[in-house]
Image (cartoon, rainbow, N blue to C red; front, side, top):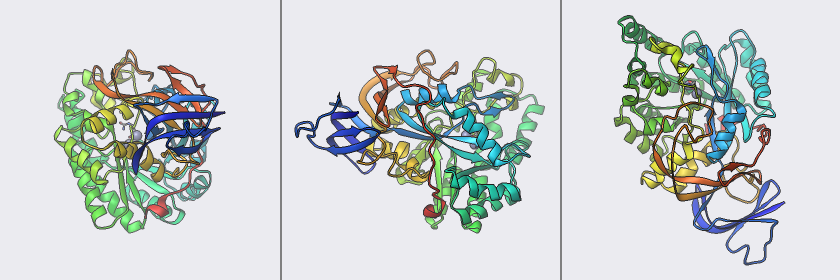
Length: 464
Ligand code: URP
Ligand code: ZN
Ligand code: ZN
């Protein structure tokens, strides 16, 4: 099956041009001006006049079905990845979880079983390491062979995912040898727990105190610490969901002295703020970790994105219904499951706030949402680019179309939206996954199980 996408503006990270794109089977065969006029034919033609043709977006940080806080993230691999497709995202990288006392292998098998046959876009896994032992360190090498090349560790959530500095350092040393990439959730969880208990004990139990119990200094300190540990271990490090100026300063200073430190931020840290938590228990809808920050941090994060001190925008999609799930924390903010829904909205929010808002170019928008994620996580050349030989994951994107985000119309399986009522400019008209149209005319045309597991190349050595 050949598809010809005509007369669109092809936007790649390194430039844009008016061109046609020929898809043959699952890959892009040709990108060039006037292909149709030069007699190239296809079974199907898609007119992209006045539209962008961009590489399918890649979200490297999702948590479908994550067990957290006595419940599970609401989106399954099916519902979450279908919502991703509606939002122009054709690849997700989710996190398999090693439970304490169990092997990495068991964790990976559990998550592979949840995803296989159910996922609507291509998918891969990072591995959350909850138990750093001689055995789990050795297992890292085997997982890398299978294309699970990154390992997330936490200085946060004591008693759950938390690792101490020694454990983190050992995992970094191993990654320095095997080429894996260490991803860090960097907040000082021990100090946070002290402040959170003091607030709760004093009767300050509203969601707002979740935010106040996680001050930016605790993120800055942990970010600085894990980067220093990576320097000592000789490994690269990738900071996930960076939210605060203090943490960005630590990344920027490290990069300025030549350290291979990388970081992502998320739309919630660019568009939402601590004020959203300050609304009685409604604020629970906005509880995530790190928490939303005062608005003053926004401009710094945008500056970091422009300067490439932040390379990636992911979502940290981890949705919990307000009713029945977030409500577990009524009367005690510490019991509110942490996480927000966003997988469907990222590309449009970044287009509207970034490109239309004049903060980043359309090429940088493609880079942070697609090209850099592919480069950082072992998919370069295959995903994240509109070029011959790449997978035909393509979005015909209308940069003028406006729509209003609402839980009534979104496709994520969650009963609220953090962006309820926000009108954004830009939307995905047609979405192709490896040459197959999966979204068109606002309808889902794919099938669960269309998504394939991605065996990825390790990038830790190349990023050093
Ligand atoms: O609040 C968040 N971020 N929930 C998901 C788990 C994590 O730390 O990424
Ligand atoms: Zn995290
Ligand atoms: Zn996360």
